Length: 123
Image (cartoon, rainbow, N blue to C red; front, side, top):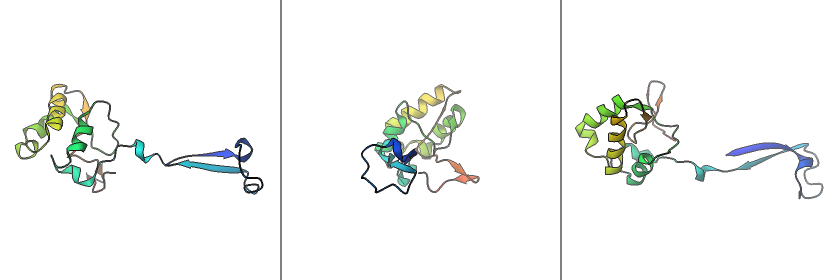
């Protein structure tokens, strides 16, 4: 939710007398539809194809995922029992990040670390 507090006299169109007791009013707007939120099951490689597609796309702003550098991406790629289950989109994303070792990215199977362990609530 995004919100702002505004002086009442700066807001036009208010019902007469209804808000007179309040010098300022808080305006809120739910903006959740603008955010990418990963379903909890997306941590299972290949399970949520849409999430892996979205996460593999360029320009994703992700805050609830562990930052992963190229070396760690290479470890993910080499972990056959994990890597083989990813969708082609996520495999391509992992490969691209392995090639660019200085880049930092995210992987659907790696939620953020909270208090020393992967979070159980990635949202």
